[in-house]
Image (tube, rainbow, N blue to C red; front, top):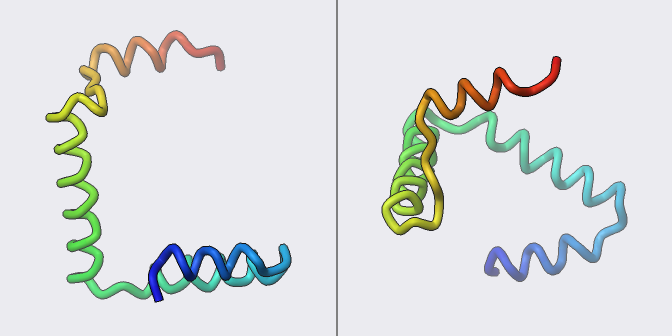
Length: 74
């Protein structure tokens, strides 16, 4: 069964069952092996690097981030 098929079926559940399913899925991520954890973060890093290279995402300098943070109230 594909992710899309699982999602389609999950969205048919009532609110409580969807929330329970979401919680179980999130808990399953906490029990990842170090190898799985590293692989997932590597996948994220590769995807983000490609988004930057392709122009789909924009990078910011530390100065831009700091200026933005300091300009926010509170």
